[in-house]
Amino acid sequence: MMTPEEVSKHPQVVALETTSELLSLLTIIRDRETPRADFIFYSDRIIRLLVEEALNHLPFIAHDVVTPTGQTYHGFAAKGRICGVSIMRAGEAMEQGLRDCCRSVRIGKILIQRDEETAQPELFYAKLPPDISSRYCLLLDPMLATGGSAKKAIDVLVKTGVQEAQILFVNLVCAPEGIENVLKDFPKIKIVTAAIDAGLDDHKYILPGLGDFGDRYFGSA
Ligand code: PRP
Ligand code: URA
Image (cartoon, rainbow, N blue to C red):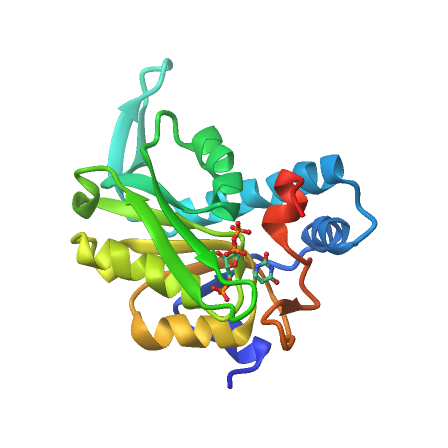
């Protein structure tokens, strides 16, 4: 199994820079004493950083504009269209962060739930933008543990015609075994994450992790 350090150096993995600020935000959401309102607020802050970083890894082309001073500015413009796809339910928490950066962005949904006993993912539903195969796709899920749910979701996208290299998996906290599992089957996707943790417990929860993201964000148990 890869170590967290090896994962962080993998060419397909983009880990946010571990600034003191990012570490302080992660500390708040990892703390089991953090009340729900703070969990939502600080998760949303990290999600915003993740979305901005993910957008950085999409292609851009040269684009000139004329400024009000009459000068030409040799700039850049995004090349190609994007969409979001959230893995429900926890991935839905990341939709607003994407909308805040990309006005009117199309967002597809894939409902996958892990069985609480076996941790095996089950696919219940998928509804995707009809032209998704011509778009870059930001796949949203805050937790990547065994990688089973992410692989099922990526499989749905690939079967719908999305090229692997068009998929960016955007994630808050992951385990090395999950990353390895996903990249073994889909080596061309990119994974943007805020934290690579040590591993998994016997119930396939991330260690040290932050517990059940969906329950803490949406207030269920
Ligand atoms: C969580 C999480 C991922 C999955 C990660 O969802 O949001 O989708 O588990 O685990 P894996 O990598 O081992 O598949 P869960 O199925 O618990 O549902 P939720 O979104 O309703 O919390
Ligand atoms: N899903 C979560 O919400 N947390 C984990 O640690 C693993 C899966």
